[in-house]
Image (cartoon, rainbow, N blue to C red):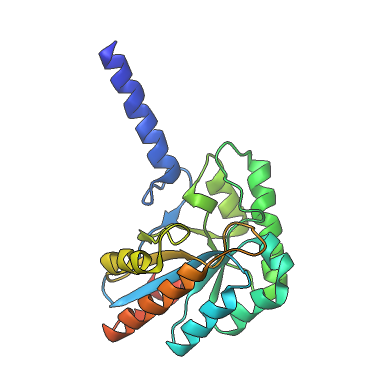
Length: 228
């Protein structure tokens, strides 16, 4: 009995890693870090655009930094001009599904609809087809790899999840500083799912601290295409 329970636990752990492990390739191809040969990091922002996105764009501009924004279709539909301002400023755009729903237990048809609707709107708004995709909550599922291939998008996880939706600015900045290394991909958020008026003040304050420290320490802050 003990042996059987151990086997079940091991199987459950393996399944959890396949679904959410940042380096897992089992369910869909993805990357979680860039090349280690250059002193450069990629800041990425999920869940936008939101009214708070403008403040983050201002901070990035002041630091002469370029980032990657994984946008949700519903939020782009709500804020098309703000969404477009991100790419106009020179930042890269990624697909973060239409409604920010978790993809575990989702059918391929559901995943195709979530990703496809967002991909079409993002292409229309930005004038170019996104090549990056990040699954909401970092959750992949069986069949996602095929759907990614159909839309020609590369899955992206992260080196550091900043947890900026729950931590104060100083702790967010500390988490990022602790994980900063050549090729690191940092996951932050300029929205909170598809909440219309999300509270992201702590994220904005943390981004100011992060940018200052990275620039002071001589890091290049570049989009995903420059670290991968």
